Length: 225
Image (cartoon, rainbow, N blue to C red; front, side, top):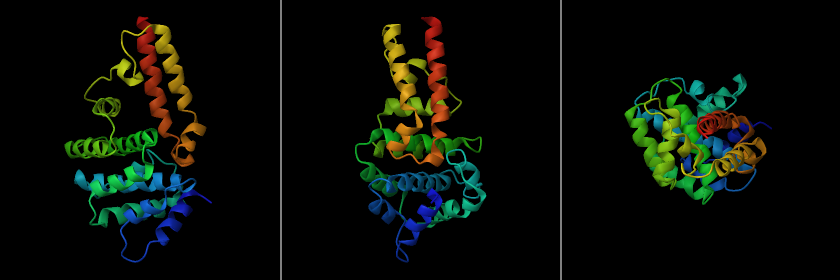
């Protein structure tokens, strides 16, 4: 069964008039966690679309920056988007429910933030309201501001990322130590590890940009070393 069929099942379990946030209360354990991850990215993406005022943009195109969506599954993704967009519950409540669902699993929340950044820049524009939105979501997820700024610099073309910050290493650390940390980061991008922490198979492409940025940062640093 595809994740989109599982999402449809989760949505069908909602009583008439129940907010989408009720889904997050029910999907707290594997394998439902991957369904919750997909719904969380799409739902917060819908709220973000309202934040930048571009509610008519092609959400399916934006979501394809994160998920592999077959043509037959587009209606399912669009249904989640529309439910979240029409829901009177604010994005902060959504983010708080998602934080509660994933608890202290900061790696999964970071994966989710990356998905939101992919969606934010999918239309070629990074709106100031999107920046405010994402910064507030990161605060609710308890992602340190330094990590948020590094993430922002990797996606938004107004600042060159600091390669040491991208790798999360001290610029004064020995090159061998930095190399060891770099290799650990690459191992962490393995699809099996991402799936284990709740990222659905359909969203493993999230790792592609992160791996590219990590490799580029290492190339910059090792060229100096």
